[in-house]
Amino acid sequence: MTRSVTSCKPDDNVYSVWQTMRARKLQNIPILGSNLKPLVTLDIRDAMQVLLEHEQYQEQALIDYIAGIGYH
Image (cartoon, rainbow, N blue to C red; front, side, top):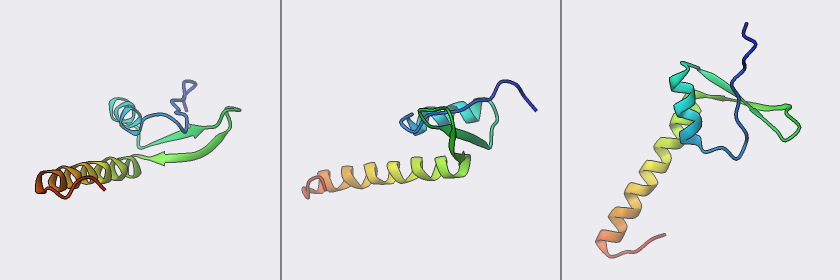
């Protein structure tokens, strides 16, 4: 058990949260609402999935832009 619990807010940047999780070697991190009550627990695999999907979207947008299709 620890007295110092690392948490995040729903509007925090996923990349920043992932960096914190990686630096502290955390597998899960609670997401706290405005009343500091837990809303849900973010798993590092879910954070990685969101980051991967974002990168894939950015890559496809760049491919479309270069091909002259434009942005979606």
